[in-house]
Length: 187
Image (cartoon, rainbow, N blue to C red; front, top):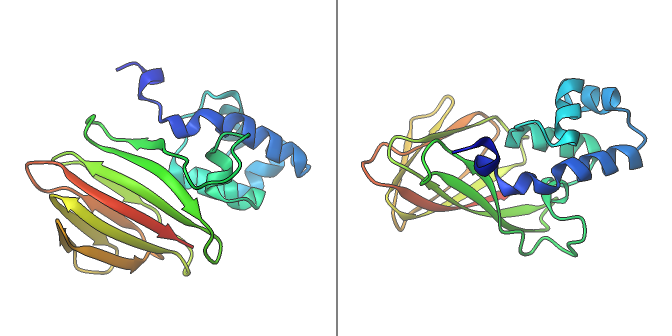
């Protein structure tokens, strides 16, 4: 599939939002890059719509710009975050994807996602701050969550898992069929 077709639609508004927020806060591209811990080249690529940026890089940019992840990715004219419904991640298989459905306020924010992983697919995540939590509910299949320093946890359809995401973790589908689950990120 061509790159343009494989690009998650959550990135559609990132270029303009990053540019507008960076300018509003008085950052140069170099300044934002330093604040977010990414290269100036990455900032330039994001603002031009050329970069294939990871969700963790978007999290770092949002933090550097003092906005929520959802503010960075939503359409600029959207009044609230209750129905974003944008594809944010796509795996190698068309059956592997994550869609940011919407968010609500928490201490800072809570995100509601639907996820699916095809057989053999994985999604690695970097560690979040100590006050971030993951809430997973498996609707179909079997999800394995591998967390650094802990035994893998297996979550079957109809079961859930809640954990603090302060260390790296991986979502894994070891099964022959897809796994579908709901993910809440609370921070």
